[in-house]
Image 1 (cartoon, rainbow, N blue to C red):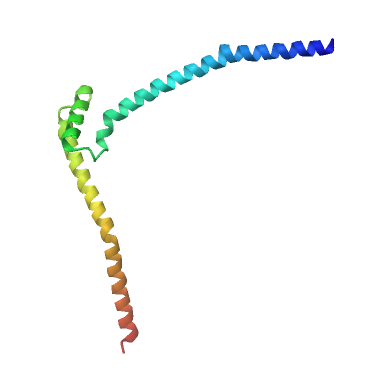
Image 2: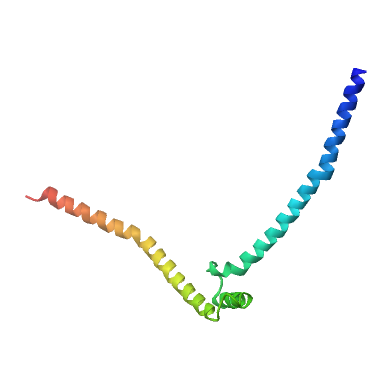
Length: 129
């Protein structure tokens, strides 16, 4: 009888686990998957709407169209001046990045200049009477 009771206990436990899996766990996981998918879709749409702000590879016409579309979509929040402000931002960012690239590319030359200058100064002091 002891084995029979243990077998029944294991069977009841298995049925309880299966019931939990079907009636609770799978339901929660399905809900979670659905919520994550819908939120991800919303995030992708939002990112696509604003991506022209940091995508400097986008040509100016497409970027201005995206700025105009954003201003129309958020007409209560953005004024018609947004498009002009965006053009100014884009122009300023291009100037900044070009200057940064120029500075980065000339850093080696500047370092070489000072190293040469310091070496010449050192050799003058070393060989001066």
